[in-house]
Length: 307
Ligand code: CP
Ligand code: NVA
Image 1 (spheres, protein in one colour):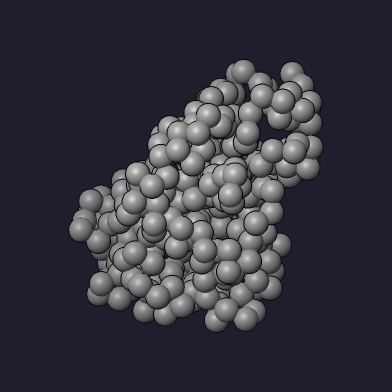
Image 2 (image 1 turned 90 degrees about the vertical axis):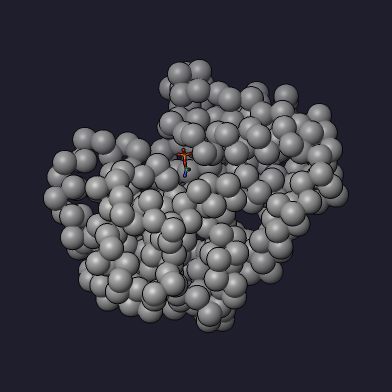
């Protein structure tokens, strides 16, 4: 693997499947890995709020024998108090890896280039690769062969949608994305996914019709309509996205055994109806649990002495 984990686009299909297999072993045999990152330290830069990402990286480091240090938005003030590069040049003298959640994806790329230690993207406005990996691990657990599954994503063509597309491309999974006009996934990310998926069996349908997208789907995925940093657009978006709510009627248009997925946090009554979110078809907390296992695999790959 490359030094950093910034995008699913950067790993090969082989590395993608290897990470999923390693995650399976870590999940089944956590004790085997208790000392693999003994005495190593991960710095965690957060410019946006988090429950899952912070907890799973911190618990993950503890369970691998290392430690994680949380840096809040007020502490570093990336680019204001110091440049991204200067922050990195300090941190690399003290820690073995850096996890970063920020707004501009460019900051993550700059940090990765500047420092000698591994950098992990823990969400930017463009992508959320750890989430995408955890979700495909969950999909594999629930549905078996990823190359036979169809994933429907309904809602905003955002960071999570982008990482899911890139994961589907590596896995050879059929994917359909339904968004309102003007909220499609970025053309650059669509192009990257199509390139990556040329030989894996991946296919991508982009539509404005949620029912069309979920047809024959094994999993129906949605995310918030207004992401972190878009709070001022919340009301306007609520109106535009209303026809894209994942509710029992929409789930009925998917396969009868289709699961419901969401990266969380979720808003019942907005992007997902409570009747779906709280139903037995919902695997959202399995997804949240799997963030822990997949990130341990990613950290071991990047920071582990024996790779
Ligand atoms: N899904 C996810 O990344 O959750 P947090 O924003 O709580 O970390
Ligand atoms: N799209 C959401 C994902 C949160 C995990 C956001 O960026 O806020």
